[in-house]
Structures are given as C-alpha cells and as structure tokens.
Length: 188
Image (cartoon, rainbow, N blue to C red; front, side, top):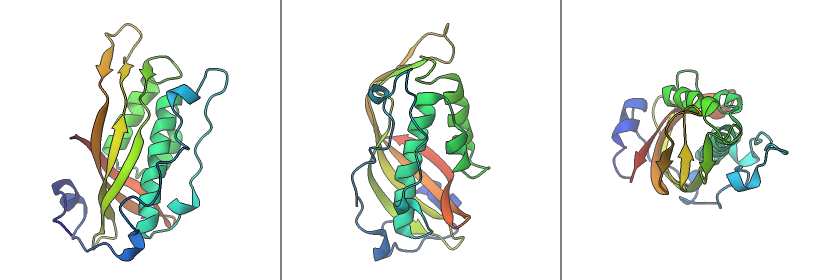
C-alpha cells in the first residue's frame, strides 16, 4: 500500500493495509440512487436516499458502500436544499460537511440557484485503510458535469466546468456504522 495521503495522516493515527474484505477498488457501479437534475422536477421532489445494506457495518467493504451512499446524500441535498439527512450521516465536527450543507441550503436545484449537471458520480473508491484510532481513510474519484450556481438570486452566476475530483475522506464509527468524519475535494 502506498503511503497515506497527507490529509489522512492527520486524521488517522496510523495506517494499516486494507484487507481482502474491502474487495476490489471498484466493486460496484455508481449508485443510481443519486438524484440528478434531469430526474427531479418541481412536481415530484426526490426521496431521501436510504442506506443500502452494502453500507451497513464497520468493515472496509461497508466503508466503500458508505462513501457511495454519502454521495447520494450530497446529491439529494444539492437537489432539494435539505441537508439534514447528509448531516445525520456526518460527524458533528466535520467542518467541510457543515460548509457544504450551508451552501446547498442557500443554493440548490429546488430553488433554481443551481442548474445543470451538478450531481456527483462516484467512480473508484481506493486506498481504504483503517488507522489505530479505528477511523477509516481513503479517496474516491468524483465526477460532476457542467453546472451554474449562485448564492442569491441577484448574485452573478458562477459556472463550474465538468470536472473530475478526488475526494479524500475519513470515516468514524457511530452506532455500528460509518459516518463522514471529514472530507475534502482535490481537483485533479
């Protein structure tokens, strides 16, 4: 296993190698549970994504399932402005989780301040390691399309080009399941 990513080194007390329980780096197709702008409409808001069985438990395989599930919660929040389910699956100290929630409460698909292909698509989930603290860290490939957002209706629109990011993350245990402890996006 390559050395831990610097972000994760601060979060994980120490790295250990991922066992075979984690499976291959991309054991499943990206979740189609993710609401996308084309599948949502004002007449029928998307439903809150449910945690799939693959995201239950504290194994490395469940960590990968959780990362994919968490992305569907981010997409739901972006589409609706309702960040409560996402924050419910986050550690209370996750500053980037709170920052994302604050943004999508103001700018989201439901209020028209976010338009286009803003839904995340998760590719490879890699580098899953569990530190001595019990937390799991890793990274995921995230793709988003071209979209436009504004903080308020009178603000100048900001255009985000189609991009592939790497999300570095750390997960912590709560009630026998993983929650997002911290995350950050790094542009490739």
